[in-house]
Image 1: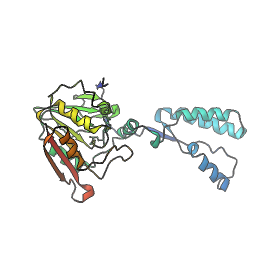
Image 2 (image 1 turned 135 degrees about the vertical axis):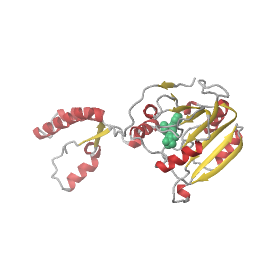
Image 3 (image 1 turned 90 degrees about the vertical axis):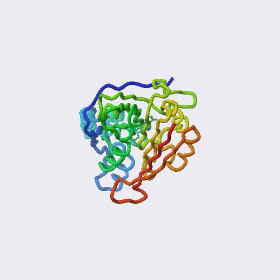
Image 4 (image 1 turned 180 degrees about the vertical axis):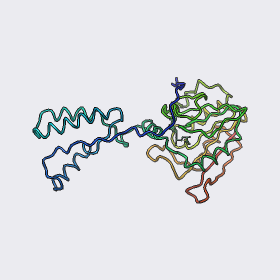
Length: 286
Ligand SMILES: C[S@@+](CC[C@H](N)C(=O)[O-])C[C@H]1O[C@@H](n2cnc3c(N)ncnc32)[C@H](O)[C@@H]1O
């Protein structure tokens, strides 16, 4: 059974950089500037370049002071390995070691602009403004392309809780759910068949593992005549998280799971119209 949670908390929208830097003493007797010192830094980079979460910084600073004191007393001090071990536990993971959700969460804390600047947002909002009735804003992140308007109810869905808590419309129903749980055998059981007039995914197509099952499931919860919309910039994305490219294959995928009347067009939200800056919009009807 697919797991999900309704998010009700709202957190003030301001960019936060959750990591804080702590400089640890260089615990080497090699003279500064010497080759040996350089070598020590290269080999012990993890110790010199040290980040902890903001809340852990006071403890990390205290440990750094203890480390300095112990090293000055005796470079072989028996407390040194113990202190380093405590520090190691406080250390934030390097970006490369984060799992995908942890990566999105870091970006969410910083309120990353996934689409681009305000021009892009405005253009996309305008494009999507025609959708009314019940709309699912899937993989919404911490932004919305849907302003409030009469006869439109927007449901937000993402698997990043930090994003959903910062989603700018706290009164909307916000659902935390990992769409990678959708397979040929599983359903988004908390949504009914024929429930939505529109489902919009902006800058999300490249990330779910099983896009065929997901678009098929989106079709189940769309009303007959409802629209599934994808907006993407094929030249941009988080390469380390992408499961696929955005290209013409999307048409084959959508047709293969039963959508019809596909519309595919491109637009450029900025005055510098070039291929890399062009956005692609695919709409498919159930
Ligand atoms: C590039 S961001 C786009 C966010 C938003 N649509 C925008 O344009 O600002 C992709 C979003 O997809 C969400 N996402 C990625 N994989 C997901 C998954 N398996 N289930 C649900 N959401 C996912 C991420 O948390 C992130 O918020």
